Length: 234
Image (cartoon, rainbow, N blue to C red):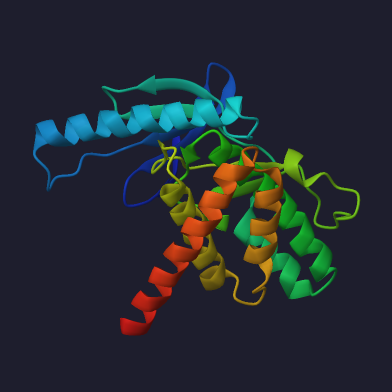
């Protein structure tokens, strides 16, 4: 990690920023889990790195903006990928915009358009993100005083952190993916309760296979019902 700066650490990985082959680069290092057997930990880590890279490449092919992958080093447990310049975490952007209480309806429509289209593209290609939250979405090249009426939302949303992603065609898994997003929004952005319904509406409009989308909607209602029961029972 020479010449790379540690910028974040989570439960699964460390993130470093630096230059690789003259490009601004983010290294994601999946560190060793001491509580697991060494051989098992090595195998699981390699599998997760491969799955993450496959999901990112497939998402990009589906027209979803993601960081470009420069190198996957299985032995060093690292992925070298593009560092997205001039970007803001969507959660921070929403919090800052909502605090100003200006053009809130236009803001909601802007975010719903961006997220609804991108998630529909993922699910239409059977890509499950696994951790859809506004902390895993970046907005790039966007001004604080953006004109939501004229801005093309879909060009500036970048989905990151495919560490829990996998390829799956079942309506159940897509429904759970949407439910994870709904719970994340209700927790992080309770001041805008209608955001998820707007995202889900756009999602349905842009999902390419309409009969498959109906299955996802049906499964989502089942998943949502089960989730509410768990919350009531505790």
